[in-house]
Image 1 (cartoon, rainbow, N blue to C red):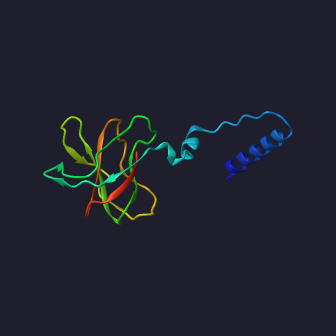
Image 2: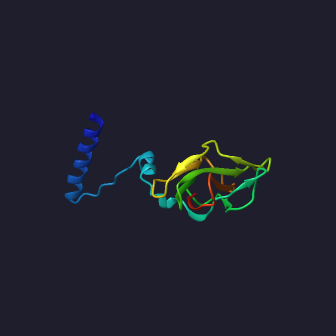
Image 3: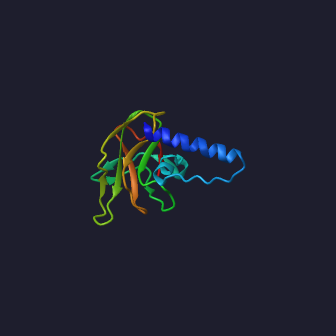
Amino acid sequence: MRTLKNKAARLAALAVTAAAGTTVALAVPAAAHAATMPAASCKTYTGTTSTFSGGKPTSGTEFTKPGDTTCHDLNLSDANATDLYRGVLLHSTTNAWQACTEGWRHFTPGQARIVLCSGVLTGTRMRVESGGSVRHITILD
């Protein structure tokens, strides 16, 4: 609590100094800046969920992790139905599709985005699987 009061007092002093016509430069810690970054730094894609047979996709949209995004996860941001969803990545060495460690996640349209896969590397091929029928989805990547 004391730290917050100290910071507030310093900011108030800077505001008074700035109002007096003095140039003031504020430095924001990188962690604080990252926490305020808008979701716009992620790329948005739409598609459909995949179904798998014998470990191979039989339908649905395949996405590829872009290199020009600050997102490091596969996020589900919208879907046309409440269902269970999970992320599936193509393993670069074995060439086999593997479910992400986050597993099946419940998602309801309109809720905040959820992480389906963490730490996805650029160029990784990805799919989203649903527990029910094929669903229309929006991902942030």
